[in-house]
Structures are given as C-alpha cells and as structure tokens.
Length: 414
Image (cartoon, rainbow, N blue to C red; front, side, top):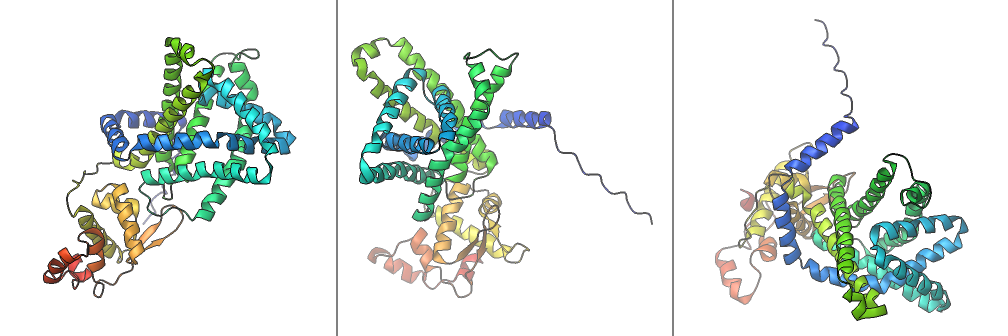
C-alpha cells in the first residue's frame, strides 16, 4: 500500500496577515466590558489612593533616581551620548513640554549637588530609589492578586539591575536612532516621505514596550506577553492622551501661571505624576484581566461560601488530573476548565499550596499544580476554617454537630 505523501509545513503568517488578525481581534474585543471592569477595579482596588501613594514616593525618589543614572553615565564617559538620547526621549514622550525643561533642569542640578552629601547620604538616596521600586512591586502584585511576593533579596537584586542597566539599554537603543529622531523634530534636515511618522511610531513602540516589560516582569505570577503588550499599548495611548490634555488645560488656563507664578511648576508636576500613575495602573488592570476579557468566562456571583465552592471544584479537577499524562494543571488551564476568573483562581491555589495540599512545579512557561493531599486521610477542617467557617466559640457547636472536622477530602470530592 503506497504511503501517503508527507504534509508540507505551513508557512508562517506574514506581517500583513498578523496586522489583519490584530485588527479583527480589536474589532471583537469587548470594549464596554473592559470599561466597566476598569471602573470597578478603580473603585474596589482603590487605584486612586494607590496612585497618590506612588506619586508621593516618586517625588521623593526623583532626585535619587536621577543621581544614580547620572553617576553611571559620569563613571563611563563613553555613555555620554546615551544620556543625551535618554533625556531627549523623556522630554518628547513622557513629560509635557511645558514641564519637561524646568523639571529636568532642576533635577539635574539637584543630582549634581548630591555627590557632596557623603556615604550616609548616598545610602539614603539609594534607599529612597529602592523604596519606589518596592512600592511599584507591591502595587502591581496587589492588582494581580499575588499573595506571596518574591523574597526581598531577589527583589532588591532585580530592581537594582533594572535601575543601573535599564537606562544604559534604553539609551543605547535611542542612540542608534538619534539622527532620525533629531531629523523628525526638525533639528536637522527633514527626512523624506513618511520616515518622520515612522520614527514617531517607533518612539511610541518603545514606550509601550517599556510598560509591557513592567507588567511582564514585576508581578510574581506568569503573565503572557500578549496580555502584557495589551496593557502596555493601553498605557502608552493613555500617556499620550493625558499629556495632550494637560498641555491643552495649561494653554486654555492662562491664569494658572498668574496665580502660582514661579511656583506653578510644582502643582503641575504633582498633577502630571498622579495622572501618569493612574494611566499605568489602569494599563496593569487591562493586562491582568485580559484573560478574563478575551474569553467567555461566566461571572460568578460573590455569594457566601463562593471561595470554598471554587476550592472544592479546583480540588476535583486536580484529583482527576492525577490520572492524566501531565498529572496536574496550570492555573490558566484550571481557570479555563472551571470557566472562572484566573485572578480568583490563583489566590485559592496559593492558599492550597500553603496548606500543603497542592504542589507547584516551576517549569518553563506556566507553573503546573499537582494534588499532594491523600483524599482518604486528609480532613477538610482546615479548608473549612480558612474559606468557609472560622473556628470560634459561636461556631463550635455547628462544626461539631455537622462533623465538619471529621469529614475527609474524599467525601468532599465525591
């Protein structure tokens, strides 16, 4: 019998097909649900208060951050062009024009004087810079419902690396296109055709990529790149809109500078940093809830005992997965099987891991969770106490008469 001809490998989709698929996905995206989710999370997670806290910490840490970067550039004169390109990028993309030059000039002046404060002062400056990093870490992990952050030593090492090498990498990338950026801004002979527009798009992509990297790396959980990029693009668009809106407000309110005079830069800077953090946190919400928004997940009512019910369903799925080839499930696969919100599944998984009932296998990609508890001998009393009915004198009689402490996991899963 003749063998069937081998199937030829399918060619990878081209750029045009990918762009078309992205446009189709944008057209099908549930925008109204996204706006409602953003409103709910802004109110329930108190993102306005978080943005205010980050604004205060940012202002305290601005001089230390600039000092560390300037010290790095000064120590290596070959990176001088990197510093100029980085300053130009920040002026053009991240800060409104009427704020950029006076603020950057004052920060550079303050940072230049910081070298005279001695070792103790330098330690305080570095501690202030790391405090901002730790605040960002805590805030983003709260948005992703992460119960257990990275160990403190690992966080400090990662953020110190970002603080020192991040400006160098970004400055090197910007230096490679410094001539094109200068041309697009009219500083040298203009580029032909639409190359100037292309450079603007590249700058926007750098900003969106920086936000996507923030959402991908900082949360102590697995974040897919496609979801991180969704949040990064949202934040980059939000920054552009907020920047233009603030510039329009200042132009249409000439009495603002009249009232505050030379002091006008400070309230504008406070307002801008606050708006910037609100936009970044909303982008984090988009990245965190992208799996829920992009898939048909039933919204479970927040009723009494819902977390205990969800934990029981998860244990049933993990018990069944014992007899499969993988012997376990990832958090995303578990959420998809239960048609549940991944951000509600992951905290319960962390709780089960803390109790020793479930093990987490850190592998390439998403971690896999396996059931460790033996259903025939494991009592469900600890799970009842953590998720359903706490142990107290008022509930002791109910727990005893219902034999909740004697109930086994096998009986619960039956």
